[in-house]
Length: 357
Image 1 (cartoon, rainbow, N blue to C red):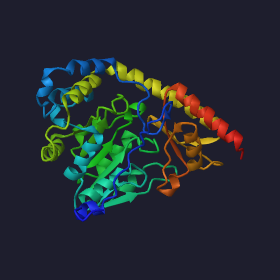
Image 2 (image 1 turned 90 degrees about the horizontal axis):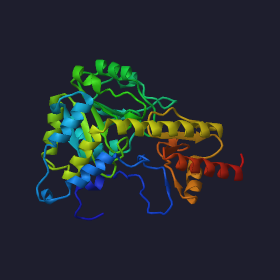
Image 3 (image 1 turned 90 degrees about the vertical axis):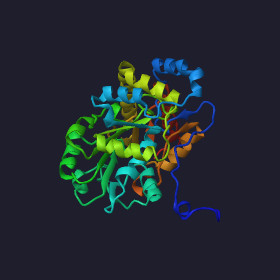
Image 4 (image 1 turned 180 degrees about the vertical axis):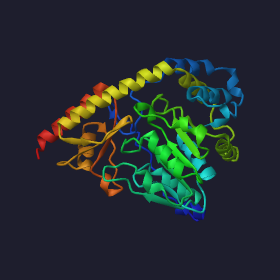
């Protein structure tokens, strides 16, 4: 703390991102990165971008990328906003569309950066408890609000909300924005982007970090009717007119265009998830239904923090959340390659055999 800090900075509790340790031979299953490298077409596009043009500013509107996103989702370019990762897109969304007199509503078990953004921007919010089975119940959001935001699939639970349920919420919540964060939707869920044409209050956000294996490139986007997109652009251009450099735009455009790679990659991750869930169930773990590239699992006889610590001793890193208290028994396990998942299972068997309960 410093005397030079503003009152705003003094009041902040910053978000802590997933750990990125520098350890050799690490099985890294803690930050939901894709276990496979990006499309070869992405790598070729990045290589092609190296040259004298780097002396020039990138396109501030990322028009080529917006066209690729629009084509993929069947919308128009004025219904697309792109930014430096979905985190930045969401941060602009909080300020542009979710700061009102009534409180913002979101689940009590969700991304920990939602309340961080609220404190940063001075947004009143209310956390709505998920059910005992960790599901979002739409009826709980039918109340006065300044906006609604949730991830689908939710994080860290991985549980999906059906598009029909999202539409039911939209029908009862027409006076404020509903934001659906679909960072993991490609791993077995159905996007609600098709509802945009009928609901002017719907904003859908995506990232290229997960299903397109571009966490290192930092590209995200939002889909919505033009007035919502204009609001995001006004915030962006009051903050940073050039959020995406030439490499990010080129690589992301290639990724959006390579649909066959996306389909193949997601199929591999889903198959690995199915195999891992089966193995964990056979060991007595309860695993929540997942539509993401991670699973949320607990064992009745072994504490989540203890398992996470013992796995770390074996150079296997998974995520354990201490708050809220009812998720503390769980491990959030990113889906790795089949070989990485096998190492995880073998390590858990060793740990549980050494300490039978």
